[in-house]
Length: 250
Image (tube, rainbow, N blue to C red; front, side):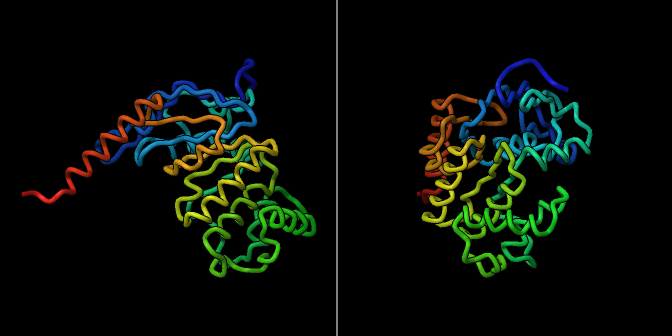
C-alpha cells in the first residue's frame, strides 16, 4: 500500500515489547524518526537500548508490537510474509557483526548464494559475484573458505553478499564489532563508499569512529530517541558509576 509523500524511511511511534517469562521488556518505546534517501545514518546506543531491534524491524525480519514503518511510500505492516520476503530480497542488504557466512562455501559461492533465490542463472550468478568481490578488494581470495580468511576479509565477503541483489538500503548491525582497529576502519570506508554510490546506509554501533563518515546520527536510550547531550550525559554517568564500583573498597 502506497502512502503519502514524505521521507524515504518514516518510522512512526514504533514499539516492540518482548515477554521474558512473566515480565514485559519494552525494547522500543515509541520511536518516531525520518531517514532521508541516500544518507549514512549511524544509530548509537548501549546494549539494551533497542538499536538492533530497530534494525531488524526496518529489515522486515520482525514485526513491531505497534507503530508503523514506511519505506519509499510502502508500509511494511501492510505486507504479508511473502511480500516481506520479496522486500528483504530486493530492497535490503544485511551485514551482521558475526558475518553469517556459510562455512562450507568459498567466498565466491557465499556471495552468489542470494542470487539463487532470485532465479538468476548460474553463469550470471558467478559473474556478479566476481564483480562484487573485486569491488571489495578480494579478487585474490575468491576461492577461500571463511576459515581461511581474516575477520576483515570475512566482513568484506559479507558486504559483497549484501550487495548481490543491488539493494537500495544497507543495514549493518555492529559491522566492526569483531574486527581489529585497522580492519574496522577499512569496513567503515567501504560503507562510506557505498553511501557515496547512492545507497542509503544505516549502521547500529558502539564505535564512535563511524561518526566521521555519517551524514546523520541517532541516539537511543531505553528504547527511545534522545538528544546527543542526553546520550553523552548518560554515558558519562554510566562510566563514572562503573569506575566507582571497580575501585577497591577500603
